[in-house]
Image (cartoon, rainbow, N blue to C red; front, side, top):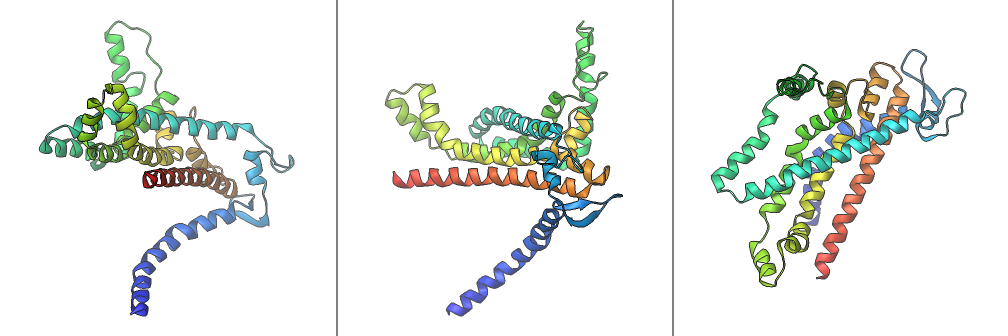
Length: 295
């Protein structure tokens, strides 16, 4: 009986393990190996150990073959900044919207959820080009400002603001769904009890609502932060050459510069940042679970 259960478990896990191994672990291993190899003169790699790919970013380049350039750290910090601002912007929009949707009748709630997922039926490139038309100097925003008598057009396109707007627009559904799931499960009796005990609305929010919805906020923040950090489509279209993020830099190293080892090193640094975020999230979730169990 035990052997049968063991074989059944192996049979269930084998397909998933193979898929993860072939399509995730194997490419990641290739990238890790390439990141420690010497770049070829005309692209590709030379099979010799070459840690200076990381040194160009982290500061231990030998100064002969590779030089440390702080511009890469600036790009990484800009990527973290824009990813963090995207999380805050989507949360500011989705948190009150989730409460409003949760209070609607069931048919209205389903319709709102359909509207949230509606952008997925349209190509991402098409939606970004729509924002390109809106934000450009002769676009809708500047045309409206000129019609109102403001004769100095606002420079929006190819700025960090444009990139932030584009990423916020794209990742709103990814923040809304986990936040809405946590808001929908709120027990109204807890709010009534806090009001009966004399708590103000502000106290009820911080003592009852916010802690109960914090898992949804944390999950949405992780889901938004990770793809925002490595995004390269939005910066390429709305940021241009002025707003370079680490995802665009990796793309340039692989396709334009043909420096595969350095591109792989940048990708591995990005993966390390993502791994740190996931570990922090898991530790925070474990701490919350332990606190709830102790109560």
